Image 1 (tube, protein in one colour):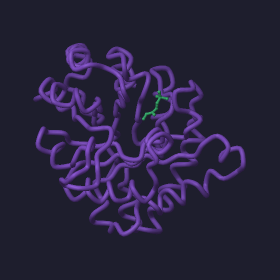
Image 2 (tube, rainbow, N blue to C red):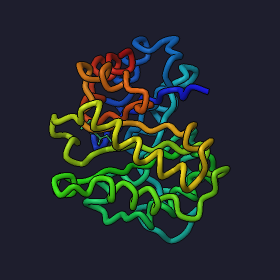
Image 3 (cartoon, protein in one colour):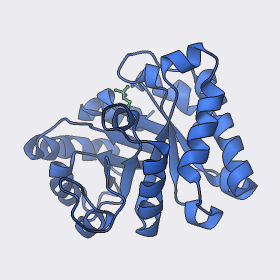
Image 4 (spheres, rainbow, N blue to C red):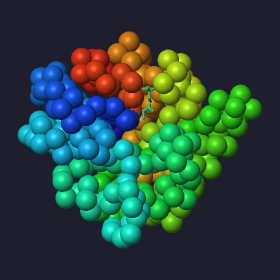
Length: 250
Ligand code: 13P
């Protein structure tokens, strides 16, 4: 079965609810009746509800950029998967490199969050990727294997089925330096190969692996032409409705 591409916007810490609502108004006509790809917007927590309301009936999904690995409790400042489900979120980004870099997330904490997201039927978009020093030291494969194993620890093939992985080389995020389609494909093959070892050929073949890192309207087509690339996780170029609309319509 062919893998349906997923194109997701990660707005990071941008946009007030009013700005988010305005964006959706401009964006929806650009993707009306768009069926080739699954399209998801990931605003910050404070804009989730307005975006969910604004996309109703459009087929566009809405995801959070993070969540905590408990259903409830004394965890000041955190958000539970139950809360995300209750407002109608469908997806959640987990283990983004900015969370790993600035908020001390590790493969272990991402693994706990992943289990919780799967349990509550939120589609997890789990991020992996090497930093520049690791690439330059020839350690990309080692890093991707370690992260893939770490985030998937203790998860069965049946449980993992809805999961999406995003390969986001940290040196390509927000830098304007995109991985070439070949570099991205090579990394995706490493990740898919490891998933095959851990969870079997069927799960690996069905797994969607997105590329993220300076995806723009002018490089989306070449990236998406790669058989190994099953979609994109877009930061900067997703903040403008026209620009993200062009990416979705690669
Ligand atoms: P940019 O598209 O701004 O490089 O960000 C990529 C990213 O981090 C998406 O999660």
